[in-house]
Amino acid sequence: MKSFDKFSLLYQEAQKLKRSISTNRILVLMLIFPFFASNWSCAAKRNIEAKKIIYQDNKVIPENILDEARIALSFYPELEDVEIEFKYKKGIKKSFMQAQPKIVDLFKGKKERSYYVLMSSKFLIQDEEFSIDEVPSEVLIGWLGHELGHIMDYVDKSATELLKFGTGYITSENFVSKAERKADTYAINRGMGNYIFATKDFILNHSNLPDSYKRRKARLYLSPAEILAMVNSLEDDDLEEIEEEES
Image 1 (cartoon, rainbow, N blue to C red):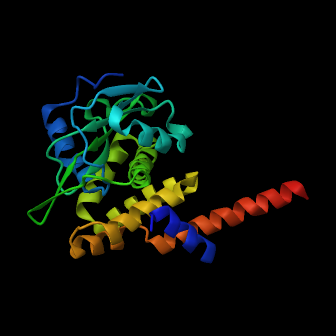
Image 2: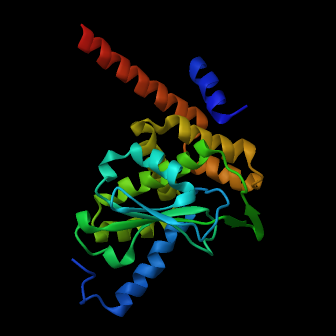
Image 3: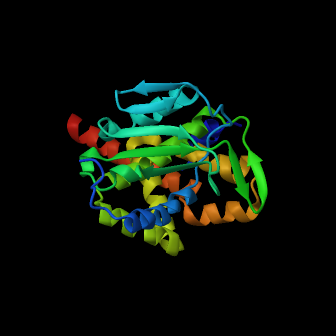
């Protein structure tokens, strides 16, 4: 049964980088920002040399994920003026995908900052390498939506706040849980509940990842039941607004 079908059934039931920055400061940034590598997300196995497409004048997207990226971006009109590059990268550990600010833009103004969504086609867990040859389109859209949720969380933060965020992410599992749940919440609140559900269903029930890894993801991220509850709540709020407008 496809994730969308399962969701439906359950739903029915329930300035340039400042020259004054020292070399040591840059090194600190390089140490802090690997926390993004812990963000769970996954891209289908794709050609890392895929042709790049310019979208909305400020988005760089590999051609072979263009459709999924455009759909995910359509739920985030707030990011229309934000520069984002979706980029394949070798050697990402413990993740298929990660969202992060571009280091060279970190100390620019918030509106001038740009971001990466980095993707890998291979995933290393407990010295075992996993690859995903085929991921359903709705699952990939959900993962991209989750990463865009992270970027929504970053855009209003100052450089100092981002550094504090990075420190918290690599030192506190409770902080990680709050950050990941917040990214999911951004996506769900923008109407991506079915895609986020599809992604969680894929991780927990349809992938060959180790049970220990699944348990960790279940602990840190919104559960399918929590996603459904949030979607139901949003639908109830929308219904109330419609009834008020009609009355």
